Length: 330
Image (tube, rainbow, N blue to C red):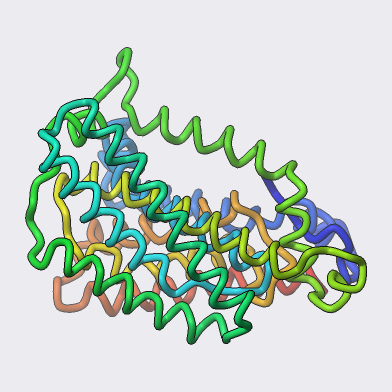
């Protein structure tokens, strides 16, 4: 799951550089471990199994969105509409589940439609950015407004409850094990399989040197479109998790998540310029953001200062991660 460019253009020197080249997510792993210790220091109960399960349930949506963003970043692109896709899928499935009675059949059918909706949004982004050759940051910002508008049309006011069957399953247990751990296990298996696919290698090759990839015969446009489709798919999965966690529909629920997902990708060791990255790092980057928020809360930071302290802490950790990544590529 630690994918890097197949033809790296960097010269690694020293054992640390070679280690970071092979496992670019190591700095993020060290940061997560340090933040866990800080959480335990300020609140010993935060390291209990129940507390860690709650943390994972809360930030599983951000983990999935960071992974979604990573596949786009691999190719040197970016998706500023990822959070809007989360919002759109969230309200769509909640409304459909409610109208169809909230039973098991309605839940599964609504989730299937939610996946198709996420794929469609990703395809739109891919066509606009790759096929029409618009700047990714501008084009996806525009589509984010469009997707948010659709979400507000479907559900103008937040608060429509999700069926109890859905959120109780997400927050419940299966054979004594919290359901969120089954989600995590399935995610790990899926990422392990995807890391060995040709698509991931092609995305990294395009991000490393798009012109060279084109000259070697790689389908650059199709590859970039597939990256955005993957982003739409994982954004839809993130919407399922945030629906299970909040138990309601909210047309603006993904608003802040987009930039958090970009920060998580960078914290995880991926290069926004493309060609270098790891989805494991993105997963750890999302956990880093969650643990920073927990530390700030357990420190007893006054509410009016929490955003300031959280932002400063993320900035410092981001700087440390970027410096470690530069060392790996120097």
